[in-house]
Image 1 (cartoon, rainbow, N blue to C red):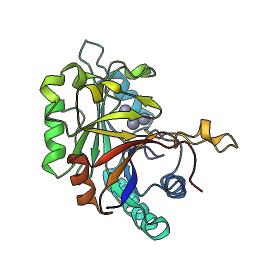
Image 2: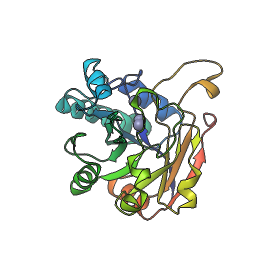
Image 3: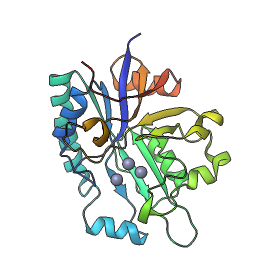
Image 4: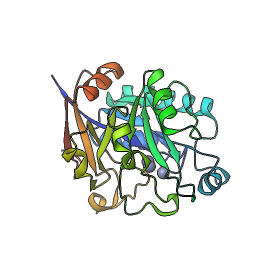
Amino acid sequence: MQELLADFHVHTAQSDGQVPLLEVIDIFGKGGVKVINISDHLYDTITEHGKRVHEMKQCIQDWELYCAQVEKARRYAEQRYGMLVIRGAEITRADSGDGTAGFHIVAVDLKEPVNPNLSPQEIVKAIQAQGGLAISAHPYDKPDAGPRGNVFYLWENLEAFRDMVDLWEIGNGRVLYEKVAQEGLRFVADSDFHIHIDSHDAQCLSQFFSWKTKVAAKRNKDAVKEALLKQKVSLVLVNKTPG
Ligand code: ZN
Ligand code: ZN
Ligand code: ZN
C-alpha cells in the first residue's frame, strides 16, 4: 500500500491566510504533498474576537464561493500534481472572556458549513453527520494563541471528547503535542499553514515545512478518511522539499 504525504490543516487567503488558494496548491504540490484538506476558518459571531475577525473578513464570507474556488483548485491539483484536494474548514470559537474556553475543530470533508456558535458537541456531531471527520486542532497550550485566548475546551474536557472527536493533532506547525501520544489518542499532524515567505532560507521561514501525516491509503477521499480512523498513519517532519 502506498503512503501518501498529507496535510489536513491549511489556510488560504479565503480566511486569514496570506497566500491565494491556487498558490497554496503549487507550494504543496511541488512539496510532494498528495492529500490536502483546505481548512479556512468559519468563525463564531458571539465572542469579541470572533466579531473582529468577521469585520476584518478573515474568515469564510460566502460558503458557495468558497466551494466553487476549492472545486477549481481540486481540478487544478489533480491535473498538475496528482494531488487530492478535500474541502474542509476550521470551526473556530475564540475565548468568550467569561471563563468559557473556546475551541478550534478542523473538519475534513465538509459538504455544508457548520455554525461555530453551536456547542462543541453539536459541532462534532454536525461534522460527522455529513460524513466528515472532526480534528481537535493544536489541542493544548499553543504558545501563540494570542487574542483568541484559551481555545482548549476539548482538552479541558478530555474524558467527554476522547472518543467523540475523531482525531487529535499530535503535531501543528513545528510544535509537538506529546500528551496526545501519551493518552493514546488517534492522531494526525498538520502545518496550520497561513504564510509563505519565499527565501533562500525557506526551510526556516515557510510554514509549509512542518509536521505532517503519512497515510497508507489509495488516493481518494473515502479511503483516506478510513485510513485516518484506522490509524494507518505515521508522523513525519517535512524539513525540505524532496529532490
Ligand atoms: Zn488562522
Ligand atoms: Zn486553529
Ligand atoms: Zn488553523
